[in-house]
Every structure is written in C-alpha cells, then in structure tokens.
Image 1: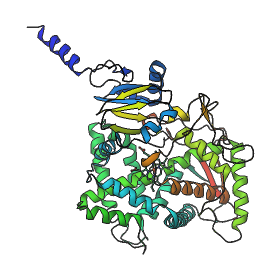
Image 2 (image 1 turned 90 degrees about the horizontal axis):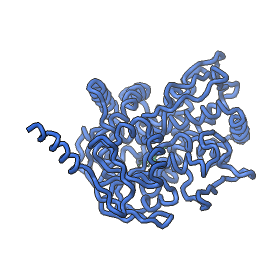
Image 3 (image 1 turned 120 degrees about the vertical axis):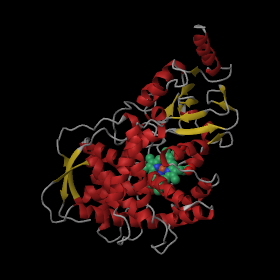
Image 4 (image 1 turned 45 degrees about the vertical axis):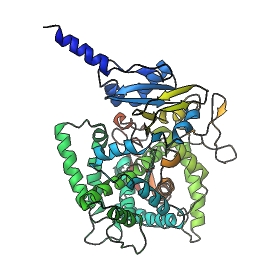
Length: 484
Ligand code: HEM
C-alpha cells in the first residue's frame, strides 16, 4: 500500500503539468508544483524576467501561482497586444486586483462608463480648471509647511515631502471640494493612505500574514469612513469628476458601502503615482548638479515671464529641459505590468515574423521597464540618469530611438498605451511640474548630506506603477526672499 501515495503524487503532477504545443511560446513551469516561479517572481521581478529572457528570448510562458503568464519583451511587437482588445481583455485582471486590493466588485459595464466619463473630465477646459485648483492647493500647502519669514532650514525626507504635498493637494482638488468642518483633514487621509499603500503589493499578491491582514482591514475601514463624503455633494458649483462618478455608481444601483470602496480605488489610481514620481525627479536633480542647474535656468526664464501677472504652468508650457528630465526619471522608475487576459485563443504575430499561439485563460504581460526602458541596445548606460537623454542638440524633443536598426514606436511606456492608457497623464505632468517649479523657484533646497546617493528601490513594488524607495533621501529647505 505504501506505493499508493507516491503514485498519487506522480499522477497529480502529471495531470497538473502543462505540455507545450508546437506553436506556443517556450514554456517554463519551474520546479514547484502549482506555485511554479511565484517565489522568485515576487522577490525580484526584473532579475527573474531577465533570467528567463536570457534563457528563452523575447517571449515565453511561465507558471506563477497556478496561472500561466506569457511575457512579451519585444517593444516592436507590443501593438499586437495593445491593439487587440477583442482577444486580450484589460477588465478580468483589473477586476481581480479590485477584489484583492479594495474588496470591491462593480457591475461589469461600470468601469468602461467610468473611464469614458473620467476622460471627459480630464481634458480641455475641465483640465485647465483642475490644474489651477491643484496649483492653488499646492501653493497654500507649501506655505503652511513653512512660515514665509522662517529663516532656518527645515529638514525632511524628500519622499515624504513630495508624496505628502502632492497627495494632499490632489486629494483636495479631486476629493475634498472646499474645506469646511465636516470634511476630513487631508493630513489624516494621507497618514492612513500611506499605511494602506505599504500593504498594497501584498494585498495584490494575496501574501499578507495574519496580523497584516488585520492591519489592512483596519486601515481600509478607516479610509472608507474618511472618504464617505467624497463626491456626494457638488460643492464646487461645477460638474466635478467625483460627483459625476458617484452619480454613475448610484444609477448603476451600486450600494453606499461599495461606493466608498470605489472611492478608495479612485484615490489610489489618482494619487498613488504622482508623489513618488516627483520624489525620484527631485532626487535625481539634487544628486546631478548639472541637471539641477539646467532645470533651474529654464524655470528662471519662466518665472521672469510670470512677473507680468499671468499664472504660467497652469496651461501647456514649453519646458523641454524639464520634460526630458521627467521622461528620463520615468524611464528609470516607472515599472507597471501591462496585463491582459486571453479571452479567446489568439495567434500573436511578432515583428520578426514569428507567430505564437496564446491560450484562452492565460494572461499576457508586457513589462516595459526591461524593454524598452532599461534595454542597453536602446539606451547607452541604461542604469544612469542623463537629464538630456530626451532632447536633441537644438533643444527639441528627441523621439527617435532604435532597436535592431528599426525605429521604436514605444521607447518608454510609463503611462501604459492604447485604449487603457492613463487618463490622468496631463494632469499628473502638470502637477509634478508645478510642484518642482514652486520648490525650486521659491525655496532653497539641498541634500542634508552633500554626497548622498539615491536610495535603493523597494524591490517588492515592481509591477505596480511607480517604484518607491527603500528608506528616504534627507533634504533641507527654506524660503527664498521671493514668494510664489
Ligand atoms: C505619475 C503619475 C501616473 C502614472 C505613472 C500613471 C500610470 C498609469 C498606467 C501605466 C496606466 C495603465 C495601466 C494598464 O494599461 O494596465 C494607468 C491607467 C490609469 N490611470 Fe494613471 N498614472 C499616473 C497618474 C494618474 C492620475 C493623476 C490619474 C487621475 C487623475 C490617473 C488615472 C488613471 C486611470 C483612471 C487609469 C485606468 C485607465 C483604464 O481604465 O483604462 N493616473 N495609469
């Protein structure tokens, strides 16, 4: 009888193992049944993917916690994934994340309607209004951080400063309406959100320990309470995005509790990336004096024009040096997975003419951080920050980057692409630019330790949008004589 157990194990392994058919991508299931490569994948995503890339090339399928995921790493072939929303659907995986992170189930048609509505609210005149409101909040928050007659340096972690100010200003702009006694304090929302953010990747992967699960539930409940009034009244007197979103949820019969959960999801989508992006950008400037001088020079010219009375930077402005610095920062620190579910078998045609069958039920994943963003064939010394990488000698925007001798359509992808690309891109760019402008033109800002280096990346955050640092970068700042 003793032989039955090993036989059952063998049978289980044989039945749960997958066999690659001839026209499918190379298959790598790992040694551990069901888990496959989950542990290595979760520990250091780029290291694992680079190892697989060396072994299999630009396309391969791996088993990760019971799921089969095909990674495509040839940017010349990305359109085959991005443009086929019939076979490759954004929603199923987005719904998995919504359930895991926000405990949220929405009616199936809801996300598409919400996206169309949001796009409208983040364009044209609506965008200009949002930009000016954001500037106003940023200005008053920065002032309240430091009395303008203060002469002494104030020390702070740059990550906390950038994330805190942009989060609070963004929250007030999009969620807070006009402040009154009934509205939650933005600092309280930020404090709770940071606790939630620290647990976010584990929530998404379903790897929380028992005590972390409890902490996550507590902080989620607090945030739902804090966000309960958001978007309920239209107190800005205009058709605000959040108010319209609330109405849409109500029309779809979504109950009050679920609406609050949806508010937290929107808070994450709109505030989770902007602060970290501004942190990396300022950090690179402070550790690269030549870049800092170039940006300050550009902003100096703008601030002279601002003396004439018009609030610049609330509208589209020509800031090629800053734009290049932002693009370079995002190249180095934006690391989202672009994930789609294969909802029907699909033949994927690669740019090199190869064709592969993708199986229904699998996931397809792009990880632009590895290619194009950190690809040494596209960018010389890809690990290095070079502030003018995205500028031509004449100051115009550099858009021509090549791989395999062919010009790339996608040479960075921090905002995703295609139908599911980022709706808040312009708003985010304006917010970061305005924040950096205000800090650099109205404050003296420097590293506490002149030779400090950028902190390491927190490796658990790969795949979830903007990366975050391990620790912080200590800076000090004080107001200049001029005021913003
Ligand atoms: C530096 C800041 C930001 C970065 C790097 C960023 C990045 C991204 C990326 C990569 C995606 C695509 C995900 C995919 O294809 O799977 C995305 C989608 C999205 N972003 Fe952003 N984002 C930022 C700021 C914002 C802001 C400020 C808002 C709102 C005000 C916003 C709203 C959204 C929404 C609603 C989607 C989902 C689009 C859909 O459902 O198809 N983002 N973002």
